[in-house]
Amino acid sequence: SQKIEQNSEALNIQEGKTATLTCNYTNYSPAYLQWYRQDPGRGPVFLLLIRENEKEKRKERLKVTFDTTLKQSLFHITASQPADSATYLCAHNTNAGKSTFGDGTTLTVKP
Amino acid sequence: GAGVSQSPSNKVTEKGKDVELRCDPISGHTALYWYRQSLGQGLEFLIYFQGNSAPDKSGLPSDRFSAERTGGSVSTLTIQRTQQEDSAVYLCASSLVGGPRQPQHFGDGTRLSIL
Image (spheres, chains in turn blue, brown):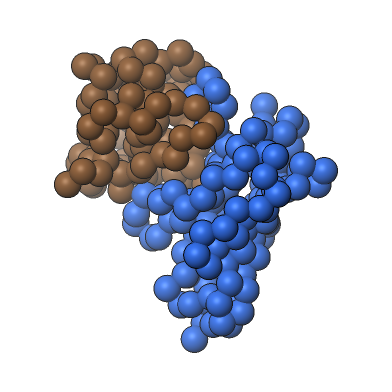
């Protein structure tokens, strides 16, 4: 079955820098990958979806890439702000409805 | 509100008791998901409903867990004879339809504590 792995448990960066989070998948290449943000005590919130044949997707300060050769998606937050501090989750759903989430990377942006 | 609603938000119960968790999805959403999230961990997929049907129940951790959905809307997750390892946050999500392209909309979960 598909496995989603995200890099390191915590990422600390300075305000204004670019945060880069990694999502690696095993086995088959998913047609789509999704990225979510989760704040403490809250449910995840959907951010971006990227298709397998899309190299890059952007939304405001967010950018997601998909590299099928490396079996990897990168999630970038440019000009980071303390309000961007949260846990970011990568996910994949199958056509049969089974969802697989990574364990998440916790980002802390320091002022 | 128009979001996914879960109740109760917190539940404390004694080991061995049964608990029932409720999820009200966004109106019109045909797909509904249940997850379990232990402290500091990622989301563990439990079950998916398309309409009232759950095609794959293999994600449920044991036969003490069951879920149903009625009227294509409200869903309940029932845990019988609760154990301490059942303590976790149980999250529900819904999407317009099922499938890999659909974003999931989550509730804020039920925090279950088994004493």
